[in-house]
Amino acid sequence: MERKRRWPTVKKATCGVVLPLLVTWSAPLWALNASINGVSSEVEANINAYLQNINEEQYTDVRLEGEIRKRAQEAMRVFGYYEPDITVEVGSSPITLRIEPGSPVKIDVLSVNIAGEASDDPPFQEALDAFPLKEGDTLRHAPWDRLRNQFSGLALERGYFDSEFTDRRMEIRPYLESARLYMDFNSGPRYQFGNTTIAGSHIEPERLLQMQTFTSGEPYLAESVALYNQRLAETGWFSSVTVRPRLATARELTLSPPTGGSPWWDEATASQPQRPRLSSVAFASALSITKRGDTSLPIDVSVEPADRHQFEVGVGFATDVGPRMRFGWKQPWINRFGHSLNHDLYVSAPDQRFTGTYNIPLEDPLRDSYRLQYGVRNLDDGDTQSLEGTVEIARRWEFENRWVQTLYFRTTYEDFTQGGVSDEVLLFYPGIQWSRTRTRPQRFPLWGDRQQLSIEYSDTLWGSDAQFARVTGDTEWIRTIGDDNRFSARLSIGAIETDNFDKLPPSLRFFAGGDRSVRGYSYESLSPRNEEGLLRGGQQMLTSTLEYQRRVSGDWWGATFVDTGDAFDDWGPEELKTGAGVGVRWISPVGPIRLDVAHPFDDEDDWRLHFSIGPEF
Image (tube, rainbow, N blue to C red; front, side, top):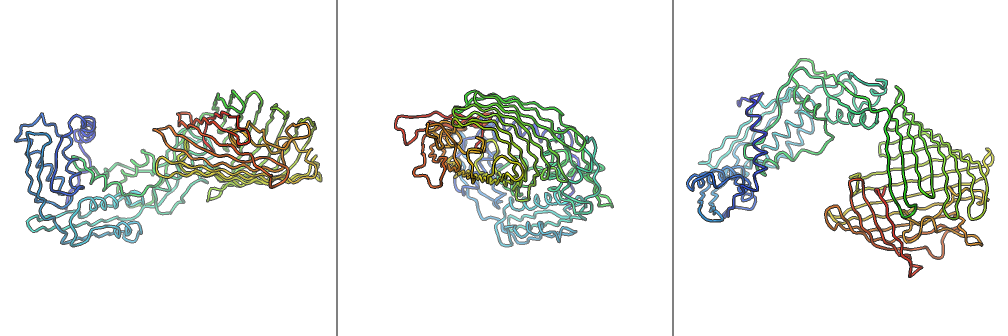
C-alpha cells in the first residue's frame, strides 16, 4: 500500500509555490516553437503544454532532444500511449516532432470499492456511476484522477474526516498493452453537528442560533456551515464572521497537482459541482481534523461587531432633475436585539426629501421583520408643487422562492397644488405588496428579473379625506444571448378607482415620461391636462420598453431602444406616446453609466438627451 506523507517540508512547500509562479511569469519568454505530427489534437495540445517552459538556450542540441522526447512521452502517457516512437529534429525553427503513437494501453482490471458509511451515501454512488471508464477501454489518467478527487472532496464536504484510501494504484504493463486499476476508499464514520458556541457577539446569542441552517445531531455538511456563515454576514451586524468546526490538531489532506501541470489535471480537478464555499479558515480547519472516537463535531462561531455608524455621500447628475446629492446615515445595529436605523437625505433642484427606516428583525432576521418608515418631501416641478409627510408601519415576510410580501398601513399628509388646483389632504390607507428581484451579477446584470404588485385602499369611514383603490404593477426582464447580446424589457401599469380624483395628491396620481419611463419626453410630462393646458395627472398609466444592447469592446456597450406609454383617465387611449433612440453603456467602477439620445415620434424636430447612473433595478 502506498504510504502518504502527511507534512511536506518547508523546502518542498516553497518549491511547490514559487516554481510554478516563476514558470507562469516566464512562460512567454520560454515558449518553445514546435511542430507536432502524427497524434490527435488533444494529445498534441497536451504535448505542447508540457514543452512550453523549456528554455532552449540552457540545452545543447543533444540534451534538448532528450528533454523534448522525455516530456512528450510523459504527456502521451495520460492518454494511454506508453510506448510511442518519437523522432525529434532540432536545429531549425520550428522544432519538429514526428510521432508514431503505437497501440494504447487497455484496461484489463478495474476495481473500485467504497467501504464505511459512505457506501450508502448517494453522492458517492453517483460519482462512481458517472465514472466513464470500463474494462476494455483505453486508459486515460484524467477520469481516474478526477474520481479520486471527487471521493476526497465529498469526504470533506460531507463529514467523513477519518476517510482514507486503503489502496490506490495503477499497474501498467506496456509490453502487454495492459492496465490494472485499483482504488479502495474507506470513508469511516460520518461526523454529526455538535453544539454551537458563539464568541464576540454584541447581539443576543439566541438570535444567531435561530439563524442556524443545521441542528445538533444532523450529519455534517460543509454547505450548511457555509450557508450559516453567509446568513450571519448578510445581517449587516458584523464586520467579520467565521463559522468553523472545532478541531484538535492538523492533518494534511490536500491533493497536489503532478509536476509540470497540464490540461488533463485541470480537467480532473474541475469536475466538482459548484456549492457555497467555506471561508479559507473554516475550510483549512475541515482539512485538519484528526481521528477520534467521538463523531460529534462542535461548531465555533466567531464574530466582530460592524461599525455602529456608517455614512455614505453620493453626487450625480440626471437630465430629468439636474445635479443631485445624497447623504446616507446607516446604523446596522442600535441594541443587542439587532434593531437597525437608516436615514437618507436626497437633494435636487425640483425634489428634496428626508426619509428614515427603523427595522425590528424577528425570529429569522433576514426574512421576517417589522418596519417603521417616516419621511418628508418637498416637490416643485413645473405644474406640481407638494409638501408631503408620511409615516408607515409594515410587516415583511420573505419566502423560500425569494418573493417578499409586505403588509403595511400608511398615513400621509400632503399640501399640494396640481395643475392650478390646491388642496390639503390627510390619508389613512392599508396596502399589500408582493415583489421579487433576481440578478446575476449584481453590478451589471446579464440575467435577471424584477416583479412588483401593490394594492392600496383608502376610505372615509376611518377618517381618510379620500376614498380610493389603487393598483400598480411592474415587471422587468434582462436576458443575454452569448456574451455580447443583451436584451431588456419592461412593462409598468397602474390604475386608480375613485369618485373624487381631485382629492388625490400628486404622489398617488400617475405621470409618464423621463429616463425610467418613455424616453424622448421630459420627466413626468405625459398625463391628461386641464383646460388651461396644465398637467393634471392620470387615473391610469401604461408604459413599456424594449431594448437591445451589443457589446462593442470590453465594458462598453451600444444600445437601441423603443419606449411607449402614457398616463390617461380612461383605459385604451387612442394613441400611446412613443419614443426611440440609441445609447451608450459603460460599466464603470461606480456602476453602469447610461447615455441615450431619444426622439419622440409625434414631434419630428425634437430630440432629448438622457443620462443616468446605476443599474436597471
